[in-house]
Image 1 (cartoon, rainbow, N blue to C red):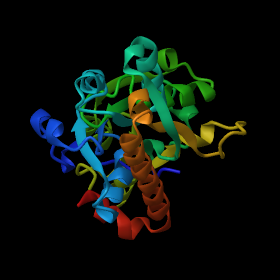
Image 2: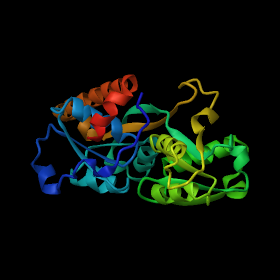
Image 3: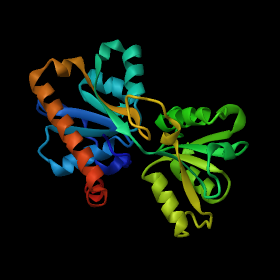
Image 4: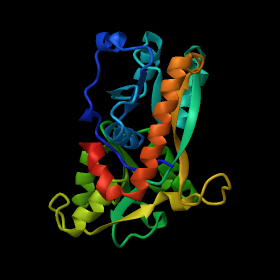
Length: 274
């Protein structure tokens, strides 16, 4: 299981094309946009710095296609629906899903007196992205599904606005919006800062509605979790023994990092960020 946390894309400098081409063919070239999937990877690199891995952060998943074609990337971390859409739209990439990660980390941060999505009816709510608007991103898809499970129509019953997380957080803190979709640890940070009176200078006490709790009745994963993340690669990597070996080493290290992070989050989280 992957821990639900996020990390800024600027933590690891992006390798240039020339540097990528100079790397050994046995090194896995992995890319990812800024999202929760990166956090265990950074911890894996901190715990096992000799991994055969070259990591390049990207701004958005649209960059993946060209990077696979030019050899700048041969694996990526991302939502499983992104990989599925890419395989359907660009079968020449030969994408394959290596693993599915189970997540718990999507929350709607709201004023503390709001207890459910039903109480948001008629109010302005924000869907945020780490850098962009968040529209059609993982958080948006989970939000839309959770709202419908609460018997609301997001287009009719809510005023939904899209904006970067920083702007959305400011609107909630100022009382200009009744809620914001933001993954952990951003949601946890907002709630904690509001209780200390430091969330944008606002005195509004905040709490979080757990979106995962909306999805029940599935036998393939535990309640309170969602299978939405995954490690993707290409058929070419799987058919090339040295690169397949590198992929499996990275995958195993990623899994170990996830397990370690869940056991000791307070001790290990700073290692991933540093």
